[in-house]
Amino acid sequence: MNAKKILSIAMIGLLSVSVLAISSFAAPGQGAKMAGGTAMTEEQREERRDLHLERMAAVLDLTEEQKTQIEALRNQKWENTAAQQDKMAELREELREMGFNGSYDETRARALANELAAIKADMMVENIRLRSEIHSLLTPEQQELVEKLRPMKQNCKEQGCKNKERCLDMMMD
Image (cartoon, rainbow, N blue to C red; front, side):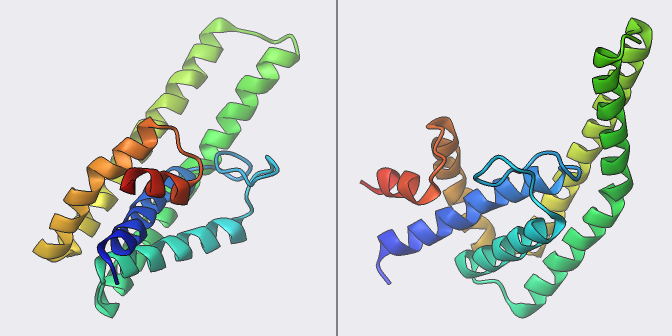
């Protein structure tokens, strides 16, 4: 395989990590959207998570044991955050209704917004913990590859690329 192709595959895998991280915290009906603008189903999210793991495995040349451990960590995080996701959905709905049914109460709205922010902060911390635990499972060589690819991922984000493959091609030129 030539270097350009390997780097392209690696970038697709790492860009998938960011998409997964964002979409995995979305409550049902929130967050990740399909092309038509409709919310992803739980099955579609699971498919995306599986695809992400396979891409990560290919890019980083993960062993079967590493894949199993990473999948277990991700499943644990998902279980840990499920109740938080449900609570966030309830809070968002209550805030939405407050704006439409004439029951606006600034004190209550601020309390709901603060509670929502606290849950989001907890989930962000959980995501960082997950990344750290996954990082600790990688070999020094795999960790080095991740570090080499991070600037390219950031470059693609800054360019606002929606088509990951096209963004990778532009970065390679």
